Length: 583
Image (cartoon, rainbow, N blue to C red; front, side):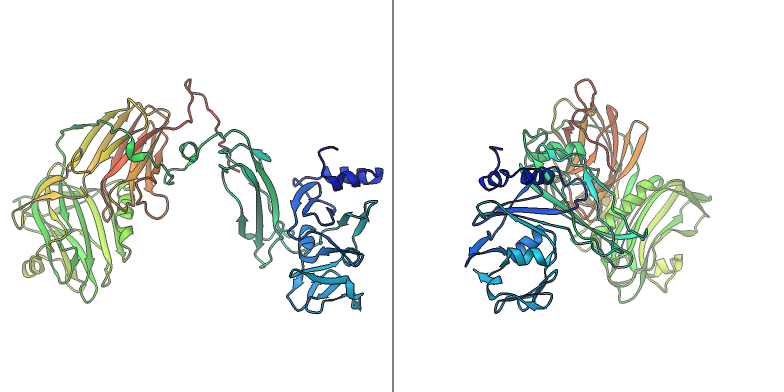
């Protein structure tokens, strides 16, 4: 008892009061409470509600021999609603006019001293408040400590009931909190809304936190708030960074202020032959029907186009193959991704890559000698909307490939292509043919953390090529359309993240981890643009991963692939401080 505040020690001198207090203290936030019991003392802000400490902004007072309680604050502590405004307040059977102030109980006027305003706060007689709520009121022997016990409101029987629990009540800083929700509707109606307040997956600072849930049903009714209190204390389990490396989902971003200071991983670039890239992005904004780019080839090629229709009316983008051989030529599409039509520039590259990596199977067309066939046709583009396409093709003979934007009424026939002009580059964007559009990088992890830098122009140079229409050499700034074939050894027990270094980035990549192959959306929502806000890619399950990465059109290089120790595996492969359960 020596740990109780003075007014509660006074209260506990009575054997009956000790029993009442013990009953109140035995009730926790873990379940429904029959009664709400508030214990407080005159001129003290410290109070207890069902044994849990709380602080009153306005303490109880004695005025002209009456014990007065702050109306709104005590009602809130008891879970009782106060209805009204500064003209009329209603609490149970009690009505108060704060302007005069005057109180009435069941319409019967009460003594003028039953309600007062002190410092802008409405106070009412403790006895009157007890009567209004049909509550029990008792005082200590000296009259300075009081206990008010009231039943909570019954509520609307048709309203849904919010309920949830946590896996424990006390957590260490950085420890994951697991929430289990079991809200319900009395009649089984669908719960259509959930509003949490104070909910966090993890708390890093010591303290006491209140988490509340309100649910709504299909009838438009909402529950009363259901709350639990979480205490955070003791030695930290995780920092924000180590927690993210354990628990963040692929595509989530997290903070790491040191990311640019990590040593660079010395990846080895292996020279291997690859397909040529035909890249069409200039003029990016197309103002008239015309040919955007053209070149001839045989064998494998990757086609990439990024354009906006700024013609007065609808238009379509085409890639047309013309057979230059004296025999039929098969043009087979082995992989393709497309975004069109859209006015949201940031979507163009990411959606195309997601579709490109997810594409499977192939389709082909046979082109007769001298014949022209469209191997790509965009949806109709309204004026101001854009298109991004990437397509891997294989030609069994030499074909001429033409990128053209045509107003919607024009077909991509050989006759039309002969009549429209070649459009000049816009001077800001690029086009051209770039040989060997696959860059093979192999690396071994020897220290952690470490960074593999991509597209900085120094460690990883721009792809070199030629604009065959102007005969001008090109350096492909951004390496758009270049496929990075990356394999890294020694990745067991690591977490891999992407750190943007050139500005906004929104893209996708393909991860192969043992038998698992997964296309990743980067980031999960929106775009990432801050170097010290990496996006988690993967936690390898094996000791070797393969990554297929193509810089997304409309996004910016360089980027870094950052390898961290994840904290998931121990030295002997055991799980350390991991809470994986998700209800």
